[in-house]
Image (cartoon, rainbow, N blue to C red; front, side, top):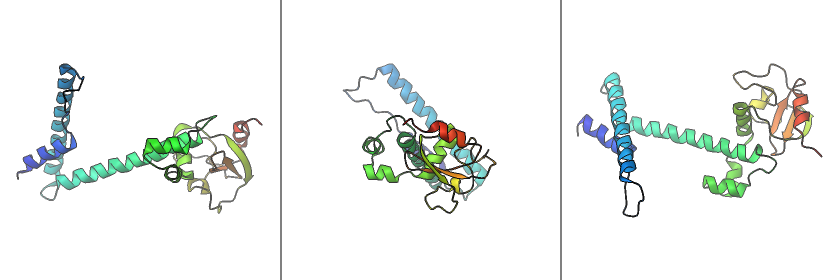
Length: 200
C-alpha cells in the first residue's frame, strides 16, 4: 500500500460520503452540495496529513495520528457533555432539568448523569459564563473540606474572574448552591452571594 492510498483510505473513513435512499426527500441539488462538501473535506484532510508526514519524516504514522486526533476529539466532547449537564442541573432556573431528562439526552441513566459532573464542572461553567447558581447557605471557609472542588481550595470561585484572572482575595466563606456544590467566597463577593439567594 502506498502512502497516498493510506491517506485516501483514512479520508474516506474520517469523512464518509452521504447516502441517498429512495425514501430520502433530499433534492438532487442539496445532495450534490453535500457530496462536494465531503470531497472538499477529504482533500483538506489528505493535504494536512501529507504535509505532517513530509515534515515529520519516516517515523510519522498517519493511521495512529488520526486515531490519536479522534481520541482527543472524543475527550473534548466528553468534557463538553459534563459541563452541559452541570449547566442544566445547577444553573437553569427556576426549574433545573431533571436527571432523567439530562440522562436521556446524554445516553446515561439518571444516576449516571448525576455522577458525570461534580463541583469542578459546576465551577468551570461559572468561570466560562460568569454565572453563579442560586445560593442556598453560607458557612465559614475550610480549605480542607473534602466536599470542595479543586479550584475552591485555592481561590475565591464565587466572585468574578476565573482561573486565568482569579479573585485576589483570600476566601472567608463557603457558599453552597442549590445543587449542593460548594464554592469559596471572599468578603468582597459576599454581597453577590446575598443577592443570589432565592426569595423566601
